[in-house]
Structures are given as structure tokens and as C-alpha cells.
Length: 335
Image (tube, rainbow, N blue to C red; front, side, top):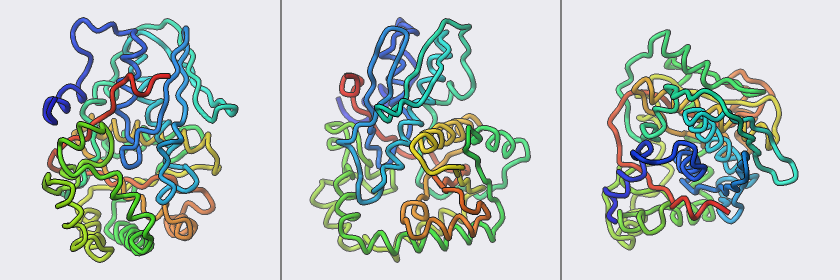
């Protein structure tokens, strides 16, 4: 199967004839969630009237995510998609954190089927790493995004003013300076880049080059091109343009710095991103200020959230639809 066929097969609602209560189909929806570097660090265990969403620690990114924060936030993203898909199938899911496995347990019960706007947006959501049009969001749009990003012990700060964007861009630049100076970070990032459609289809994961605005090229050529352009200076210019073009910047932050809150932050992000997609908006992560540990406290205080942990930073706006990332087969993530 080529890249285009794989995209069409991946980013879609259930095909006619698919059982709406097939747990494997619920897992398929769950895997359409966001994850850091598109690592898809999740394992699903299917039981009678229950499902477990567990971390796949073999897919850790220790350079960019040394405390596994993003990994557990990714579990939250998958959990949110799964609960929305279950609701559409006539199952109400009750989720709880399982400390013994550092994962999520979801118990199901029969309920009325509800296909919510967020569920309908699951195949539409994407991290669009492009310039947006900068058009202001309406009061209603901001209120819907604000409500979607709130959770249990997790809040969202929406920033729309030029001075707030400048603040974020300054911290992103500091994060780029730190990350590009780290050879381990650079090696890790390159290992997760899929430079062409063939690589993307074979792995089913990772960062597909054209998703980031680059042409599809052989791996050797992509690595060679990165030698000439891969720098904090170039990335800072690109990120500032992207931030300036955004309609809003969202900072999701938690009351406590622990795994349950990291998972909850992922759920909140996924809802916010789905709500954005339902409104015809795109989102993209600009997480450098929360990934570089020494910047995190200063960023929190500069944005006014005090001693709370900033979990994720997301820019929001209208722009072009970019190429899509792929996902591994459902069989590969079920144990």
C-alpha cells in the first residue's frame, strides 16, 4: 500500500459494516490521537467490558522527554479519543488511573449512542506545522476552546495579544537554543523523522517530512539537507513566523506534577484540538519551553500560572491542510 492509500485508510470514520462496539475499532480511533514525535507509545489490553491503556516504554524519547511527561500525556490523548468513540458506539466509559501499571483502566456500560461534534472531528484533527492566517477568533470560538481544555486539576490559558505571542516566541527560542545544542536530542529527533512515503508506510509512525513542510526525499538526502539547515537560528525564525501567524496560543497546565495529571493534560489537549478541528481550526505544538526543564519554572511565572506545571503549549489558527502522519496497525498495539 502506498502513502496516499494508507492516509485514506487511516484518517476516516468506521467503514460500512464495521461493528460499532468492536473494541478493536475503538482502539483504531484511540490511535488517531496525538503523541510526541508520533511515537504512539501505547498498548491496549482488551477485556470483557473493560479496556486498559498502558504505556509502551520501548517508545520513550529520553532526550526530549526525560521524565516521560509527553509519553503519559499521549496516553491521555488516546484515552479521550477512545471514550468519545465508545460513546458514539453506545458505551459509556468510566476511566480511572491504575497506579500499579501507570496506565488507565476504562470500564464500559451500556448507554445511548451519541456522536458528538468532537467524535466527528477525530479524523479531521491534525498538527498542522504551517503558517496560519492570523485572523482573530470569535468570542464564541474562544469560549468553546476554553471549555474543551479544562479538566480535573488541569486548566488552559488562552493568549491572543501580540505581547503574549512575543513572550511565547522568546521562550521557544531559548528552548531551541538549548535543544539544538544537545547532540542526543538531535540524534533522537532524526531517528523519528520519516523522510519519504515509503519510510512512513513501513514504520507507520514518526514525523513524516512533508508534514513539517519539507519535500519527500530519500533518507540519505534528507540527512544531508539537515546538515546545512538544521540550526537553532533557522528554527527560531520559522517558529516566530508561525507563532506570529497564530490566532491564539493555549497553555495547558496542571495543579500537580504527577502522572495522573500528565494523563489528564493529554485528555484536555485532545479535546481542545478536536474542538478546534470541529471549528475548522488547526493546532500545532510549540512545547520547547516545557521540554527544557530549566525554562519551565520561568515560563510558568512569566505567563502568570505561578508554581503550576505547564504541560503543553499549542498554537491555534486557520491555515492550509498539511500532509497527514500515519499510524501503526491496530494489531501492533493490542496485547
